Length: 299
Image (cartoon, rainbow, N blue to C red):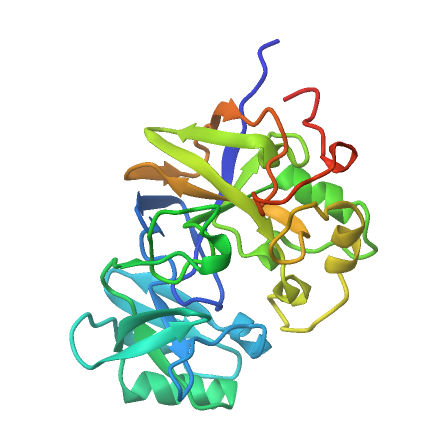
C-alpha cells in the first residue's frame, strides 16, 4: 500500500498580533507569510507592542478581516468595526529590540481596546511589508531580513500527531490554539516535523528555519485566558532540546516561504528534504553525541 502524505488540516492567521486566530480555507502566501497575518498589533503609551504574556485577556479578542474591513469581538463588548487604513498618522513602535513605523487606526479603536484590556493602548497597522533586521539572538539561524513583527520566521507549523502525543501525557487535553500555529498537518507521525528541512505544498516551497521554543503563553487557555501549569511542565520532561536559545522547550517548527503561493485546506504536504542530523537552534552550541536526538527510523 502506498504511503499517504500528510495534508493541511488547519490554516490560521492572526489579524492582530497576540489576539485570537481566524480560521481560513485558503491563504495567500508572500514574503511575510500568510497575507494579513499579524497585520495589526497593540501598543502601550510608550509604543511597545503588547502581548498575552502581560495581558492574558488579549486571547479573548477575536478579530476577523473581510476585505479591508476589520471586525473585532470580545466578551461583554459590542463588536468593533472599522476599515484598516494604510495612510495617516504614523509613529515608531517597538517589539522587544525591533523597531518599525506603523499607522495608528484611530481613537475609536484605541478606546475599544483600552476599555476591554483595562489599560491604555492603541491599535496600529503595519500595512506595508518592510524589511527589518532579525533579532540578534536569532541572527545565526536566519540571516535574512524579515517583515513585520514575526518572532523568528513567517510560518509556524504543528502536527495533529504531536498534539495527540502530548495530550496522551497530560491529565486534561489542550487545544492546538495554545501554540498559535499557522499550519496544522494531519497524517504524519509525532514530531516528524522537527526533521523536515524543505517542503512543497502545491506550488509553494517552504524551508525550515528553527524549532519553535515555547514561552508561558502556551499555558493560557485561549478560550478563557486562564493560566495553568500545563503543557509546559510535561513538554519540559520530554521535549527539551539541547542548544536552545529560549529555554529549549520545543513544539512546532518555523518555516519560511521560498516564494509566493497559495495554501488550501486538504493540500498534500510533500517532504522534499529531511535533516540527517540534529541541528540545535543555537548553532554555535557544542552538543555531546549522547545528547543529540536521533532522527526517527521511519522518516
